[in-house]
Amino acid sequence: MVRNIMQTAVKKAMCVRADVAEHIKFDGKQVTCRMPDDTMSGEIEAGEHLAIDTTISSYIEDGIFAFYWDGIFMVKRLQFTAKAIRVIPSSKFYQVWEIEEGKEQPLLIIGRVIASQSIRRH
Image (tube, rainbow, N blue to C red):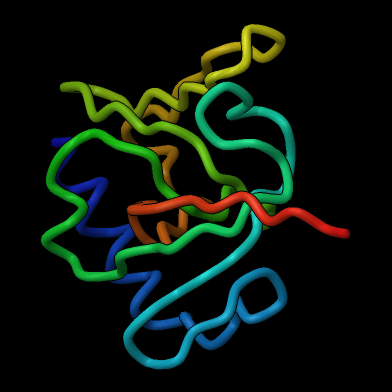
């Protein structure tokens, strides 16, 4: 069941990748973006630069993903369970929530976050 949710989201991401340019940069192979908020504080800080793996094989296990949910760009840990996808922020100030099977229509996975880098401004 969860594999179907993932496959649907991956297919949507592959079809409309050109539409996500508002938040990310995509050169045909590599995607980069900035962490949009403090929800992953402790692992990824707000404003850090992120490298994202967009290959479909990177979607087969839990991890930190860049995605759109109902039109909102997010970077969060996703845990794939039997009947839902758990969305898990690292910051203790935000709650875990779930995307239930059959309600994944607004989910558009861009890819798995594989690296983050903080930039010092002087």
